Amino acid sequence: PIETLKCFLPKTCESIESIMNHADTSGLLIDHKGDIELNWYLILFAEFLRARGDTLLIYKQMIMSVFHRCIYLIHKDSYEAVASAAKHLLKSLSHVYPMEYQLTVENLDEPFINFLPIRAWGQAADFDHLQIQFHIPNIDEIDFACEFVETFIYFELRLLNEKCLKISNNERLRSLTFIHHIAIGCFRMVPHIDSEKLSNL
Image 1 (tube, rainbow, N blue to C red):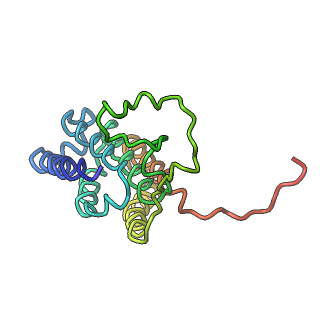
Image 2: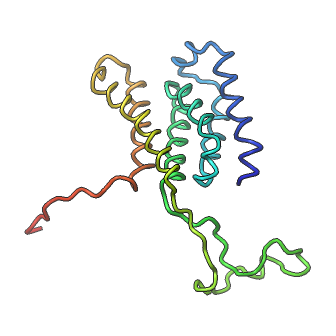
Image 3: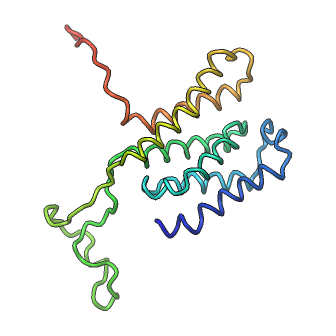
């Protein structure tokens, strides 16, 4: 993942910035037809943000810049890709998850002559010996996630609160989609709400 990000994420971000700079940006923001090339890069961008949170910290400025430029896109495919990117970013930064999904103690990097990976398919795994390593968010990742949420969600909530009736249905849907995906991405960081138990159910 580190090598993949190093190779592709900066180029993807540069391509998005380039399209936003060279296109008629004001027209692109209100264009319901969208831009096929931009959509492609936004979908790629969203998928790259599924990487481990600690590897994404290196590209923080680049990632934030793309969100600042693309958050207002009104085309459905575009804003859904941006919203998915936000969800993936927050999950990568704030969730606990296995770093690898390898269910065998065999070395998968060996030549096929020594070990053929399909031989391990369907075999029972001894979970005590797998030594699974988990991604546990560090303070920098949590700070990045909190900064992202504070930067974007409050603006969207204010927009809906103050101008809900003045904006178009498409703008309203864009805003709600973005808020929804942010909420899904960061729900693990939100404490449980204490409430009284309902009786006689």
